[in-house]
Image 1 (cartoon, rainbow, N blue to C red):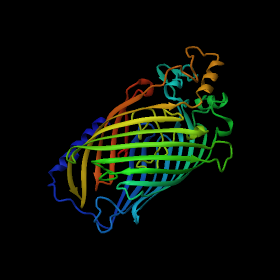
Image 2: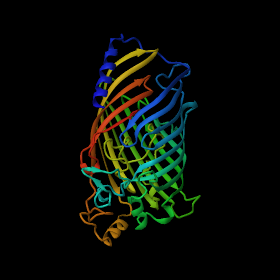
Image 3: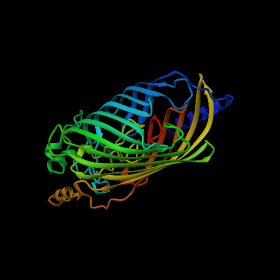
Image 4: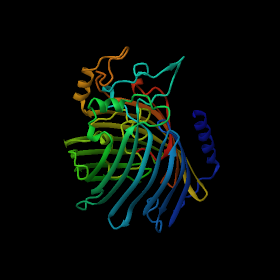
Length: 441
């Protein structure tokens, strides 16, 4: 994979032989049908089809678009799949931005590493009865579940008090989540962490197999960026209050939480070199949250398909996906974005960019820590393992680092390849590769 990325970079740099002409101003409709060919170290190889549809109107706002639609149908070789439609319409109505996302995810192998980061016990294949054949460990399903989810998110944004760049936001969201133990061939007789959590009461019986979640979202946004998808300067700050009344299942899992995001883009050299960073925090204020929703990042608008963390391709690249989940969490991402070369090809404007990065995050509000400790206290330790539910380790900052390569068309369609590694072996012991679309913020 490293060799392939280096070859791709060399080919892209060779395009600098194209003379850099005046930027083409896009007007009207612009279609970007693409085969979906990607890779996610946590999900496998991705294949399918997608189409980005942009409308630039008369071109007076370019590179901003009047509205955008995206349709995607794809699956991953590790058993996950996605059917998605979303629309981003910043100018279809006067002074009003509208955003809609309708997505169905299915995952035969969805990661579950327990609660509260380092406090969750590490996986030991010998302790959990996974047979060994010589030096080869048979594939384990211990840290996987089967999860399907339908998601609908609708958000709007309007100016607040006629203050430049300041807006109020409102939105509705609905999630239907279905969870069960992993049911793939070859994993039938294996014990899983999910089943252990259910059997000990860490995961309650009435929430064990998922449920329905409705959310009412209200917030404020400050946005002075020069562009949405590929900003080179400005600030984006979002503060959102999320109420989740238990209107459908009526099992007592109503809650109130807040999400705060701060992104800043600092130009270091014209629009060629940008220091970009993101700070984020989410915490429950009141009520109870079902276990299957604590890893959801409740944002009004998002660039990436997946809005879950911490860990994986959208929050801490290189850390195990869903490896750092709790009732509250905080995270940070820092990137140096270097636009190496720009050129024109097939009547489109292109940029090639590199983005070395550093990611960090931790659980700040524990989820059912007492239940984990109680389950551990009554356990008869297995040989070589004394921490099946609660490791006794203190939760601290999880970190990762790596580098990405971007191919950007008209500053709106961004093909991304990134490689990252966790800096603590408890978070993952391999260099992970992610190929997809867009910057993570």
